[in-house]
Amino acid sequence: MLKSFDREDLETLWKLVKAKHGYTRPEEGYERVLWGDLKTMFEHNIEDIVWRNLQGNKVLIRKLFDSCGVHFVRFQDMHIFMLVDKRYPLTHVTITDMLNRKPQADYWNEMCYQLLKLITKQLKNQ
Image (tube, rainbow, N blue to C red; front, side):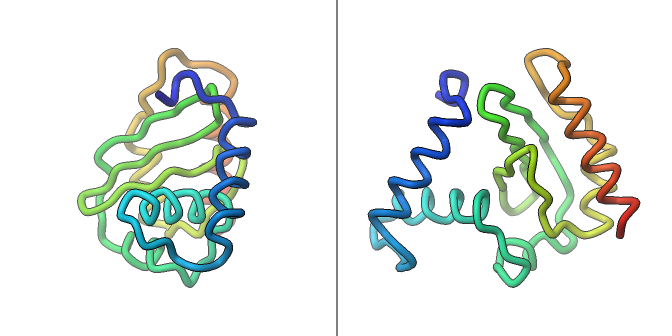
């Protein structure tokens, strides 16, 4: 499904979900998951439970969806979707673990290299 998504579709989806739910938590299971994933992706906050739960988790899989500029990371106990062009509150250990795990992509392109440069820069700035 993500192969046919582009960045504009993703931003439109976020606007629709945000308009429907505002700043309340949705009740339905799938809506709650979608709200949580999109909120983490677009409006991340260092106080969110997602970032606290990353402590001690090992990176299992990294994927890059270049059609929409989304980076997917699966950890032992959870997964997160991140926009390629944003910086997230990741720990030094998590960033190092991500750099040690090669991202899966359909083909290596400029976005792959930009993502690696951003992660490396974030590691140096910590």
